[in-house]
Length: 444
Ligand SMILES: Cc1cc2nc3c(=O)[nH]c(=O)nc-3n(C[C@H](O)[C@H](O)[C@H](O)COP(=O)(O)O)c2cc1C
Ligand code: SF4
Ligand code: SF4
Image (cartoon, rainbow, N blue to C red):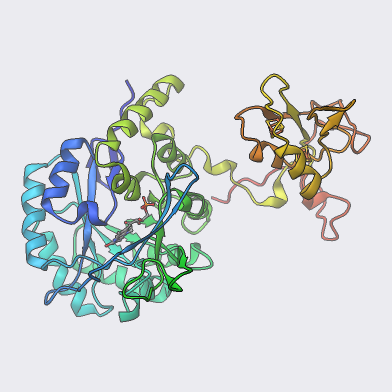
């Protein structure tokens, strides 16, 4: 049986599934039930500084995007950090950690960007026995307008400064949670590393407006006829999060920096993908909010089964395995040629592939042959773009078949070459560099 035990910057948990800082981790009642269900760790809902807690709106907090089957694909929220008293949270955290010593308990913190504020809260958190802290530099709404959250996370100098304070004033491992609301995620990650962070976690939520009510002309969620931008999360954000995780894992300046992957993780497969791209563990919010705490049991069983099937014994066998396969476009092999193929047995003759290819791609799929509805790829036109695969409603009905070296590409009239060749050496590239025939090894 695969061993799912996780050691993330020295913080041990029985599995790599942590609940992200959010409503599921808002209080002891929730966290106790989450641990009973099997979660390996939690990042407690973000704590603010001592004093009157923040106040949330008293109406709808969520906007949403659904698939055609009403499955929740994206969730947007305008909730702030915890609206409960700091000391109530700290007391509950201490009790929960005592009750569950084998689980990871991380305190998420967001206080003003002033040294004394961080210096004041860190010993209070340390006293709870928490295993580490996560710096919330991500919250895109409400708190950022007060100079916290994303307002700090968008300025690398501030990140570095706050991380440095935290490293100075606590012995607990520091995880820096990054906002995706930046153009280049490597910059805040580098700043966190320069400040001495033990790890980064990402992504927090993405600035968004999910919908506008066309009767009232109010953005959703609507509070008395008006709306505000909120933070987007759930399955829809996973591709953005995966890219950002990979960017940090690949960057020469941050390579090797532990990453806690967050964003749209709903199944064991999502989690495995994050880890393959370099995440040392994962955090989950929307999936727990949508399906309940017990979803972790499917994640654990699914990951174990897959690892057993593939012969991966520990998480270290999968972490970062896909990272070297992420490259820049210019290094992709231009001698790799594939063509679409339609399985006539599986085809239900809906015609979607034809319309997609005819109207927006390369006019490479028939619709009528000898007066009969028939959908077939014309290899002499197909550029292998795979749009048809993605619009076909029948899974695996259209597949992409690579041409073996030596075969003729009917579209170009050229024989497929066995060698690897990329854009850097292509004759059409005015900047062609000689003899760049290998994907460069990542710099050490
Ligand atoms: C209602 C709600 C409240 C959240 N509050 C916090 C918070 O207090 N601190 C924080 O760091 N992240 C917060 N998040 C962001 C999540 O921790 C997580 O980064 C994000 O939802 C992406 O993960 P997901 O796609 O699994 O939901 C919140 C998310 C939601 C939906
Ligand atoms: S792969 Fe692209 S070009 Fe080829 S048939 Fe499909 S849509 Fe058309
Ligand atoms: S989209 Fe798929 S099912 Fe529909 S005609 Fe094309 S191949 Fe057949």
